[in-house]
Amino acid sequence: MKKIRKICCIGAGYVGGPTMAVIADKCPHLEINVVDINKNRIKAWNDNDLSKLPIFEPGLEEIIKKRRNQNLFFSTQVEDQIKNADMIFISVNTPTKTHGIGAGFASDLRWIESCARQIAKYAEGHTIIVEKSTLPVRTAEKIKSILDLSLKGNKPKNANLQFSVLSNPEFLAEGTAIDDLINPDRILIGGDDMEAIKLLEDIYSNWIDKNKILKTNIWSSELSKLIANAFLAQRISSINSVSALCEKTGANVIEVSRAIGMDSRIGNKFLNAGPGFGGSCFKKDILNLIYICEFYGLKEVAKYWKSVLDINYWQQNRISSLIIDKLFGTISGKKISIFGFAFKSNTNDTRESPAINICKNFLNEGCELLIYDPKVNEKEIASELGKNEKNVDPNIGNWHKFYTIEDSVKNADAIVILTEWEEFKNIKWDLISELMRKPAWVFDTRNICKKEEITKSDINFWQVGISDKES
Ligand code: NAD
Ligand code: UGA
Image 1 (cartoon, rainbow, N blue to C red):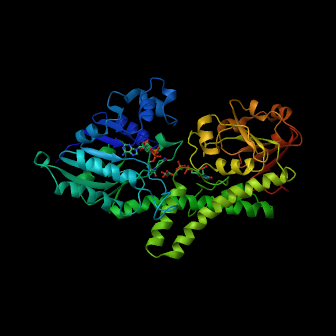
Image 2 (spheres, protein in one colour):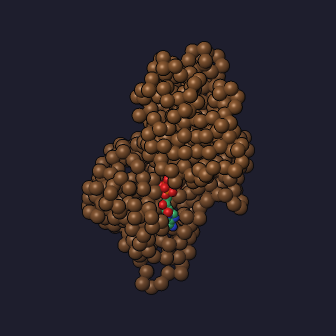
Image 3 (tube, protein in one colour):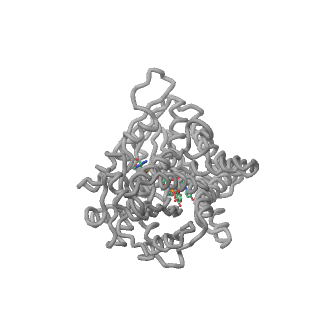
């Protein structure tokens, strides 16, 4: 039976980097090469100053310190590492298409295709290809056809060339990636080559109980990843829709979540109301699911999943309007502090963060945004909101990034908490109140603050899913 000694991972992003770091840590007998075409990203992965790693994840620095240049290597040598590898993980990005057929819905598979072509060109011997990226169902078929074409035109030196394609989607969540990788709920492997499946299973068995390793056909595996994300997102849209109803009726969404979550059939996770889900995957994966349903003529099913996205967008706009309304219906020329720009806490990732849409809504009303986030840098914010230059049009607002909470609230009319960073839970509100313009407001879209501490500091308070009568 083939032995796995060298692994190559194409794509050193949020999935490739942490996943390979954990495999390297748990399997010191394996050599892991993570490759990427993005030179700056690779440079950052190799930086001696570990605070400069391209990704912030609790626990990641320690593993990188231990394994980097031992059995974990980051480089741009894509061709060489494909050639050397016994097993290749594809962890490249699969964003939503912006042009052509399926634009706005279908996944853009150009990076997947380019990986398949590179593998077809440079691989040697029996190579196992593992789809780690989230892919539309039946993508393995496309990868296989590209690889098969290369087998047909095979040169004699590569006579042993042989490929197996497996699906092994990743379920880690950002902010808890290392813990999720070390203690996953399950590992899913889809495929029909039993030897290749066994070899991949053997890698995970170094630290994961075999009972947690689930084997399915390749299409079930590909589809399960999309469906898992769709179900998680659906729960958030459900509770967010309930948050609006709670605000109208005097019910309290925290209490409702707790009450329904104690039903073991419902479960208590993913029931926190908020400003809507963000992150690079929920929206893109649901759009992709909608596209696939439409493709197979399942219009009603497509419509059903689209409503999950509609509620998400509606919640962001609903919160924006409600805040403007409470600030006497106009925020033109006012200062609003934004607490948190990342799409969730413990990550520096801003992709699809609800903060983006909410901040844009405010800027369009001509206000000044004072943004504070402990991990997101100014460049990232600029890439989402545009440069923070003074606008010629006085109706369009401007933004500034601040490095302390105190600096970000000076003369502010309102604070809007958009990310549930731990440090926002322990703010000394009496000190903050002194720095703000009155009447001052705190809008807590994550339900992380204590009402009494804020209201006793002479600040008005609003929480998502809790009616004014109660809060
Ligand atoms: P990412 O954008 O952070 O990283 C992808 C990397 O792939 C980039 O650095 C890019 O330069 C590189 N790349 C693209 N084409 C390449 C090529 N031909 N050769 C070498 N490198 C190439 O993306 P990500 O967040 O890590 O997501 C990757 C995949 O994993 C996506 O399909 C995503 O849906 C899925 N996923 C993401 C998460 C998450 O939390 N971010 C979790 C589970 C699954
Ligand atoms: C999500 C899934 O949880 C992972 O299993 C999956 O692997 C990943 O997508 C992916 O495919 O990329 P992630 O987006 O990193 O992970 O983070 P989540 O914890 O799922 O949070 C997503 C969004 O939902 C965040 O904006 C978060 O604040 C929001 N959320 C989450 C809520 O508003 N309420 C909740 O109760 C939970």
